[in-house]
Image 1 (cartoon, rainbow, N blue to C red):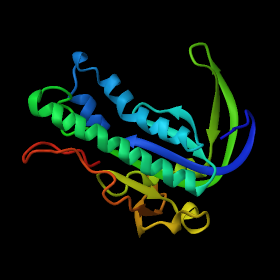
Image 2 (image 1 turned 90 degrees about the horizontal axis):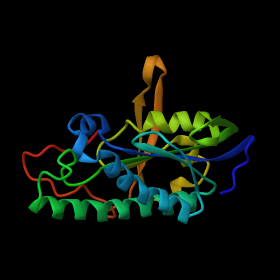
Image 3 (image 1 turned 60 degrees about the vertical axis):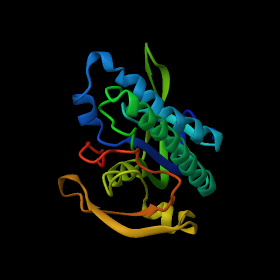
Image 4 (image 1 turned 120 degrees about the vertical axis):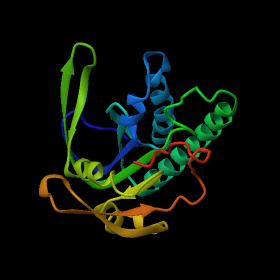
Length: 214
């Protein structure tokens, strides 16, 4: 998807975020290569978004922000991200059977949440010596996607009301609506959960091991 350097567009904002990142980091050590783990967990999602015509516009530690222009691209990206995560969880789970200390901060593999909303997005640019010129995106849709990402638990794909009711995301099986209270008395945020069926799952986690639901 082509984005202007300066201007306003209408599009889908998608945030892909690793669950329970703070406790993962707190349990890691200097030798655990957690930055590489995060890279691997997010890289598949980046590839899927770009494969289906979207643009990944920023990284936020354990998450990335993508912009897409049609509901089919959004749905296919979500399905691709879920399938890629499934492969990662299978690999990590199998590996941890023989090497349980590897990636000990993420038993069974990573867990992801995807949040989506549609709306206007204002675009400008910002510069730093390390990053060079970068696009700066400001939007109520991005804020809304960020807020609803804390709803639900486990692997999940959450869709805001504009994307669901007016911009095509209701053509696939969803559950909801659900609501979550915003920060600082912002009121309620409403969302639907996109049903991806058995496409994705949690990694194999033994009884008593910690799970990552947040």
